[in-house]
Length: 554
Image (cartoon, rainbow, N blue to C red; front, side, top):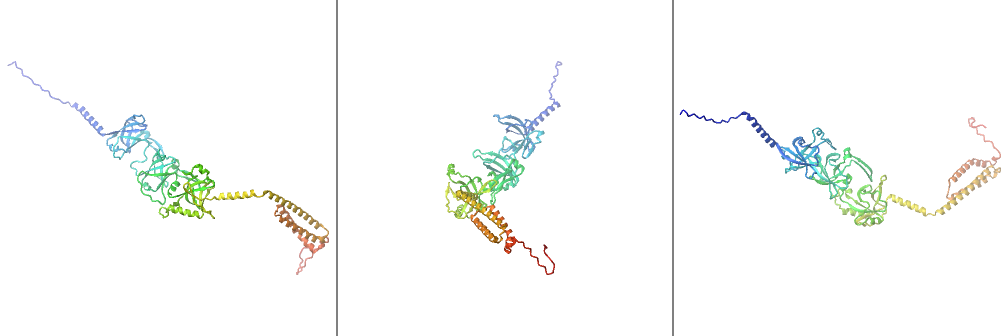
């Protein structure tokens, strides 16, 4: 029994060392951080851009209203190598901002008509700006805008569509003016290959959007306009900004009450305000004017006037309609000009009035019957611009309104210059048909007779001098009388010739002075015929009653 030893039973006890708490806590913290990182991350999106200039993976931020909302994680080329695909990891809570109308663009230093922008990125680097969308559908694939948008989704206003043909293109950002105030700008420019029109999408911000209605008209404001028209040369200059970049203006048609229009309503863009104003005259009567004179200076858009008041517009010079070819027009003795009479210029209440176009046609037909005629008139001698002038003429010929190429023909008369030219040509023709040879022969005969007359007058003058020196004073009065009679006869003969030269007039004037000087001698000879031989003393003056002697002593 003493050989039996007691058995000792041992048990293993689990001993926890506190040192293991450190890795355990680290694992828990790491897991929590991983969860927080995963939970704080937003969706990953892709942005397609023409290039990745200024963008760096892991560095370039995505911001909305200058708040970080994401970061660029990767950049690679597209499958066709034509674009850059930018992968962006968005922050958590940004899913609601990624809609189908969300916009992205790069912020970097730019110089534009609005000034210099993005200078802050010179130090921090470029970043991607995001404009949150409000669309109905979410999206994770976007396209980068090439330029920052001019408007945001928060801007209030109205967007319109404009189109123009045959005009120069305006740039994105060009201003929209109303009476000189900038109220909007061009957002987008395009070209319609089917119609050949230049299309614009413009934005007019509030509260100026209330000015837009169905009656407004849009036209270009190039900044500097030089127009040569019938009124002369006009130079118009707007602001310096408009002069450099141009712009668009709009206004409300006079006398028209427009209605409100929705977004993206289409309007036509005119070349000038005058063209826009003329377009509102949509009721007109077309006439063909056949002119036999030079139509140089008469241009499309020239006015048709009645005594200086514009009542219409020239539409085509010369007219080549579908029923008349160019060769036929050249063979025609007159130049056809298509113009229209616009009753709305005469009567502002035409649309509300009782007179229709048929009534206006009948009224003009009545006036034509009473002498209303058209003529070409030069309205500006400096530019040579012409207008069609309507007026009543005296003693009009009876005419009947005929049709020419499908339009009624308005009777015409020569203009004032042409009438003067015709009169001058008539006078020259009379002179050319006059008997010039006989006229020169008659003139030569007249000159010969004048020569004979001058010789006779010289002979008479010599006889008169001889008579004065003659000692036979008793025969002087008779001889002088005979000489005067001969002079009178000579003058009468000279007057019958019908031609008086300057030398004849001078000789007659000299003779008249000589006769005036002989008048005292003639009176003396009548009183004392022997005064040429015997000298007689002058009579003594009588003494005055007072006894004072006056007068000259001998």
